[in-house]
Image 1 (cartoon, rainbow, N blue to C red):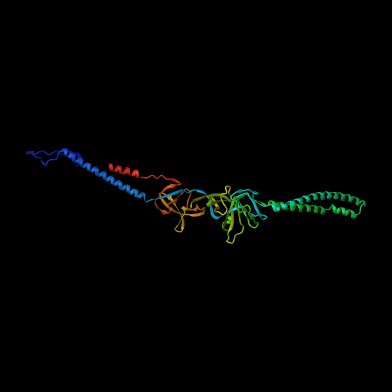
Image 2: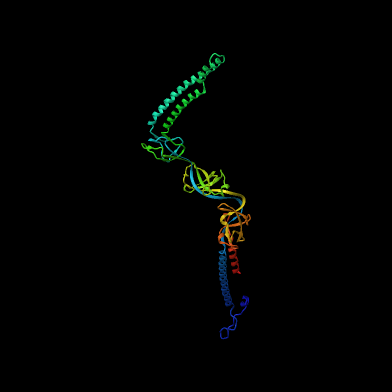
Length: 427
């Protein structure tokens, strides 16, 4: 019954005895109140029903949203890749010298200490020179005499040469005999000159030896570097059979590693390498200095790479990792190595398409350790899943939360759904 029909009902007339006639219509005012009450109850019911339906719909939507797998992805692009290997070895000094004394003796002075940076020719310690001083003085005097005799002999030799030339002319005119000419020729001969020069040379050699022996009593560094050992003290005897000192040049050091026959021909001298020395917390660039031409007993070849070590923080004997490229390509498709999964007996990559993961079989090429070349299966611009790929399969619902390192802002339909639910309740 419509509201307007309810309002038309007449209120019942009272009976003659004053009691209302129940068979007559109810009063208009009471009916209006009743209708309003009913409408209020109906409206409240609709509201409650709408709220319950909205909550159920939201819960269902939330459950649907939780069914996807969040993933990270990259946009596939062409770039360069190098196949690299990492080899382990030890650091060696470029130059090092163990120092021996020439003549045993007693230490009279020590001029350096372990750890000092020394230069080539710097005196490290001195030995007693008293025993060698007499020999030196004698040799020096003998050399001095030999120099005087040589000057005299050379003056005589020059005179004899002139006499010989004069005698030759006299002999040609028959003024002197052949025997007289021969006597002068002997005195002006090269043999006489060589004798004079030999005598002087012998005296000089004896003098030089005596001088060297004396100088050697001041023990010097043969190379510049760090003094790593100095086992001497004043008053102690030093033998020439044992090295009491050692100097290491740390300005340039080498890393020596072994490389296989499969890899030896893919590297070359002068090639740049990356070297990590964990104990020194150092990561530096090095250069291949040499490659052996013959394998050792284990079938390996020796590779040496040098490092500029200006601060001397890298020490001989330290463990080092050397990484070098053995092949490279430009303008090829490259993905992070972890994006490639071996699944079902084949290499596959998962690509994001229409909020779903698509499994694609791929053929791979060079590997750098962190990146892998894709030869076939993918195309430039594909959205390749790089994280979360181990939790999806072909057709899995996904949500890309990060693309090319940037967070992806996902639009949801929650607001629209709420608006539609609210509008339906108001009708």
